[in-house]
Amino acid sequence: MCYSFRTYLETLVRKGELNSNSATVYVAKFKCALNLAVEFGVIPFSPAATLKAFPTEQANIQFLTADELQRLAQTPPPKVRGYDKTYSEPIFFSLP
Image 1 (cartoon, rainbow, N blue to C red):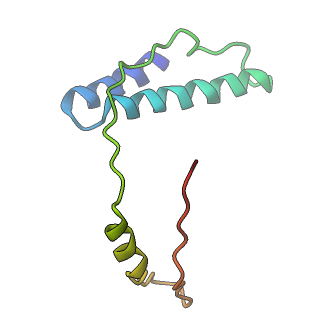
Image 2: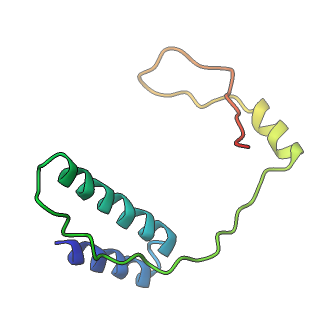
């Protein structure tokens, strides 16, 4: 099952439908879930213990300019069907 999951992700990466960095994250989350199952006694061992990650690519991170951030702050939020309340104050945060 674990290798089938990795093979499925590998197929998506080869087709260009999934980034290898995303596939690596999915494998890590899958392994984490199985490790928790072991920790809680649901399964005796993790079948994904030997599952290897994908080669990662250099991420191209882009940041908004001050002008783009200002325009974003002035853009009204979209109306969401099923919700009566419109939140007019967007929440911006930054990580150190």
